[in-house]
Image (cartoon, rainbow, N blue to C red):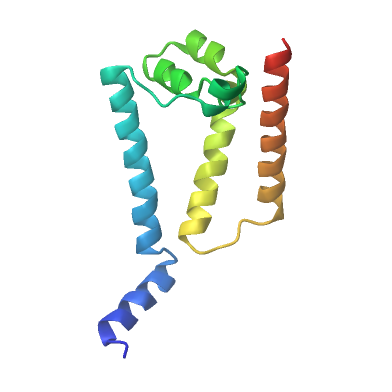
Length: 135
């Protein structure tokens, strides 16, 4: 049987449009990212790229950790060198991720334009991954 507290809590979530569990999950991901950054800066040890370890090639994401660390140290030249595609498109990527998180937390659909933009971005990332290994 559903208690009155559960009903009012559920109604508040739908009224505000936000799910408390989803917001907690997003906050947890953000905190995990910050903890990983602190771990890297303190110890210099990061998660290796399994694709690079197995093939010797750089995946489209290779250099993300170095790029983020360089951005935090305001070394934008090193950040560009670590992963040029992600560095140049970082504002756009952050917009896509934040927009998706906002819609997800409000239980709303993103729409066809967002999905097309995300697909185009992913295709560009894959093309970058191929080209960076040919040059």
